[in-house]
Image (cartoon, rainbow, N blue to C red; front, side):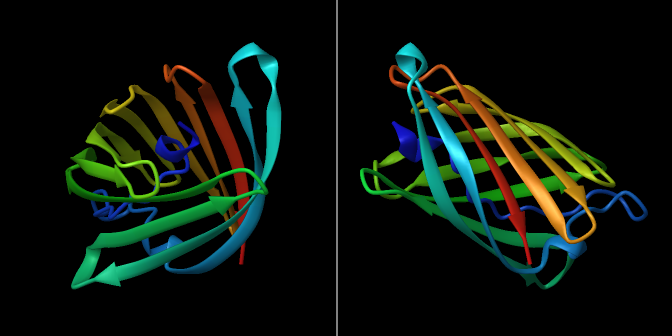
Length: 150
């Protein structure tokens, strides 16, 4: 179930002035930790690819994470309407998918995920770095925390 956590998204931006997405465009690398049932943790290496689509209101996000025992490749298509984000996500390695709903502000995303698993995702942006934290109700994977820089 590691698959459903390391999210990839296509995120449109929040309203002008509150739009964190242009600062994400580009390639990012980083590391993180996956937390499993029973308290077990595993280290991850991650790459993030953020691309602009048509305007500042759209952003494509793909985050791939892997370690010796797991690979995660997630994507989503999300639409923003005045700070309200909604859309769909998929994880390609484990064949999971579902919906995304939440809020976008100038340096943060707070999202609820549902479908193959349910949980939450927060993205915090600070200059040339950002963090992604996911908590899930999956049967084995309980969460993931990633930090990426340019």
